[in-house]
Length: 484
Image (tube, rainbow, N blue to C red; front, top):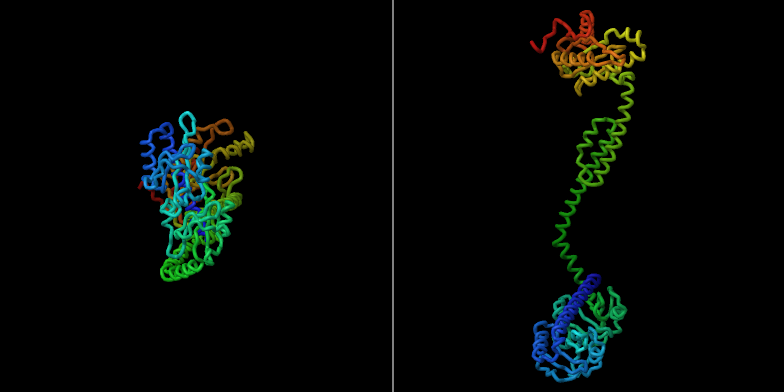
């Protein structure tokens, strides 16, 4: 039923377009002859052209305002010189408007529909009308437009006028039949379109779709026998079973595969969420391929949540690993790093440095100024080292710099550059300060962190004895300089 409803609407649009086209063609001819109504040759050429070339009309006439036919085609009907005597035809002339009539019986005895276009001269005088007629019982434009819509399953199309009379039907014996009692026809008369069950004049149950036309008060109806529709469904079921079932199975497999692909990111997100305390999982989360919108939004939200969580955890860790005065790594955290690097067998160097004559700074300028000097040196250290290096406060005015994968020569260069920068910069007490430093390297000079710190401290002590403000490399029997 719904298919027939849609089809009826489409056919009604086609008929409307065809009627609109014929009106435009008649309008063109009317404008062409408006100021030449006395030119019999032109009038004759125009009606012949319209009747033969257009193919929409069974006959075409040009009439004056009194209904006298000035010209007509085809010639076999001998229309020229006759008068329009039908009530409908005279009413069209009298109205002086574009109009499409309901079927009426002409003086020739033929049942026809007339499309009339008024003719006005350039100065506005009414000169008559040019009419195209469609003979209901003969081949006409309805057959041209709708005749191909007849199907083997019993579906057929018919058209009714505003009074419920059949004006097109593939079975010509039905033409002119009054079907106004049909419920579908009654709904068309109200301007409705839709679909419903009906029983036709042969007492057959039909599935009908219907739609009115815009240009006229006619309606197009598409009907299919209910029995034929049910049989068609049965055939479709068999066709589906034999031919479409394999495709359905393939589709199910594809859907299952796609579902697995869709759920995979969610499963991975779930696993990562379970291990979300581990900050290393952030890398796994960032590299996760959340290829569709929903998973992508979940991933984004989880990254934001975990970033906040890890930030809070990092804050708590920092409070236990950062020196509150200098914001450098404290001794406890430094010992943990040294222990980890030692277990891993990683080569690293230690720079141990001590501010020269720091006690006199506290005595002369106060402990607050001394604290500012310590912060000053911490800033200078951070600016001097590389990204992978770790600056630590060892205690009091003593500091340590840990340099991973760094030999003694490179460590010396870093320490010396830092010493020169500190010496050349005015400190918070209004003058420059200096420091002394000692360097040791693991594992070339020591087998454990404690021994390494002792060696660096001994080198620092030697730097102090040599006059301060200098860097000294620890001397040990196992030492082998990289330069060697």
